[in-house]
Image (tube, rainbow, N blue to C red; front, side):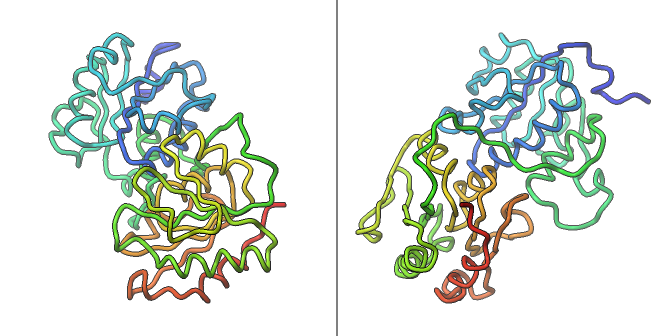
Amino acid sequence: MSSLLERLPERSRVAIIRLRSLGDCVLATPAIHLLKSYRPDLKLSVVAEPRFVPVFEENPDIDDIIMPSAPLLRRWRPNLSINLHGGTRSLFLTTASLARYRAGFAHYRYALAYNIRIPRAQEILGEERVVHTAEHAAAAMFHLGVPKQAVPRARLFSAKRWRDSGYAVIHPYASAPEKTWSPQRFLDVAEFMRRALHLEPIFIGGPGDDPAPFRPWPVEISTDLRKTKSLLASASLFFGNDSGPAHMAAAFGLPVAVLYGPSNPDIWAPWRTESQVLHSSAGMDGITSAQAVEAVSRLKVIA
């Protein structure tokens, strides 16, 4: 029996719904690339919240970016809507798109709303193991008809560059206290980067993050992911907590060292880039400055 993608008419429109969070949005781009590579004739749109739109901008795989609005999505007239999010809002958008085919994982709530129900990623991949977030999204494309293959690196694009390389990006913030490492330990690693690697540490953060603990190093607090993209695009190294910027850095192919608290690195580890994962059963406090410095020193720094 032919796959759904084989049955889709030439130049069909496919809406991919990926609402929050930053890391999930970045890790959806390998799946989007697999789909576009298999069917380059398809017109692909991503339905994304305004704050995450820069993740998908400049990406040649994506033809349109649509705000999460049912009227806007209906106006785009997709033949196929794929829900990669799974929440109630994305369910509403999937059904409101009026697409002939509405795809979502069978374990999502209200799965009866989908007329294409995607099995568990483990079943699609043929391996009963913990599945990385990038693999989970890619498995949906495999079920729809993309031939099974290695899942590529995430894809971010930035025409702008912060400056020539010679600096390291440090992201010391996170979405929860239990995912946040000690400021003093970040300062220890920053000093090592300057002294041993001859890289200028630049700390980055978002709205509401307090830059004070990380002075006198440069601290860039920005509400615009475009600025973060440009900064990461030409950096030599990334170090930080498990968070969206870590996945952005990996998408640009930077060597990265990432600290993990309660998150499972098997699900959220840096994808397809040189990396060091720091994790302790005792939580973030169980990771020492010395361990972090050793991990960073093992990375091959981009010249």
